[in-house]
Image (cartoon, rainbow, N blue to C red; front, top):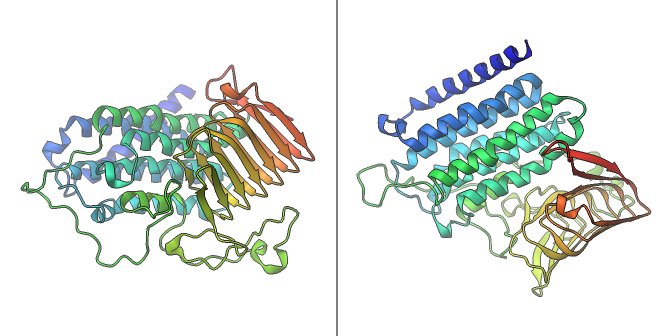
Length: 436
């Protein structure tokens, strides 16, 4: 009976996806020739199979998980329509590609609004699904100078950021509800390996655009006067990014373009701004077009100092902090950040997290040590090796250790609620909890 029920859910999910796809197929951009394109046919198969499994699993959970999964479905179908249009459109400029990717941009913003704007008990589900949609940004790849990584890397790196939240779902529901575990695993498989392998086979160097001067649709024109700047500071450069790099930096920040006002919560009021960690919780009067997440105490900072030390300071609510061009001679110092996620994409000498609240740090590996000092609610995930982890005067710290870091020496002092999660030897992709 359970097998029949599961088959029924899969069939219902596939039928819904086919119906939505049929609606998109009737658009101006779809033609008989494009419908027979092997790459488009393969994309339809990916949606029906891999995305169908995500939808079927979401149907068993319902509520907010089903709603955010419908937005994932919508984003993939919009992505298909954009792929069809690339075959009929000249390569857009750095400015006009923003207009070309507008429909996908809007869908991702809708998912981010759902993830950030509700107090759902499934918050980690919502953030994982919404964050994963940045993987579709590869459709806007126009070449080496567009400010984006190659399509395959875009898919893999975007999922790594989303996996930070999907791992939380696995830990929470591993021994509680298999439906949630099934949804997380299906979501991961949708991107890695399915979407990654699809891109590797059909679009390793990006979409195929029509050559200039061809008799087809011209490249979309750039908007006349954008009301909001979509520039964001790069971890590897002090100059603002442009083109699709800037667009998806704004998207992944989780802040809708139309949302310019913020509600003042209790922790932002002056009388409540002091706490045991000394972190300033309120945001300053920053402008949205500069995407400043700084506190009133000091401006937000993400920069390489003297070529040896990455400094990440005073960011608030920034979930897309990234350090890319780093090496084992450099260190990373994170100070005074709140409600942020930092990804360090290379191996560095050491990482220090000091006086931070509700932060997540994902890194490839360190040569010396990772230190967590004077923090509240920190989550740290190591994908490679780390010889030493030191936790001092910290309340609430979750460590996610890879197989390479199982031999790490972990020391704690004046700290509480410290957990270490390691790969489960019996279930691939699951985590086993160790309370320190």
